[in-house]
Length: 78
Image 1 (cartoon, rainbow, N blue to C red):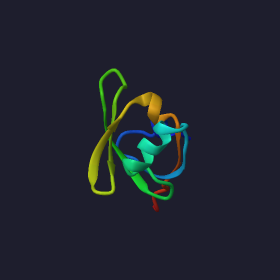
Image 2 (cartoon, one colour):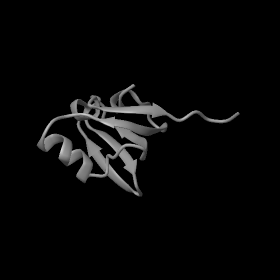
Image 3 (cartoon, rainbow, N blue to C red):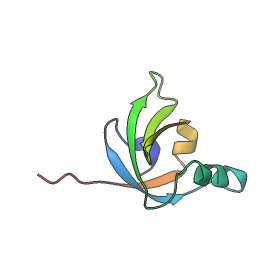
């Protein structure tokens, strides 16, 4: 599952960060690091961009970029 597929209000843990070269380094610099929790706060009406809550701050990424980040969705305990 990728970050672009995560529903609004759901939380996940980043598994891998894709992209190559400068794009991958930009993701890492923004805090999109494996084993980090991320929550989707909002999605724009046309589906792009996506607003995330990560490490205590809000980050907005394009849907194309979010598709390069693999996640594991957190399961809620009932």
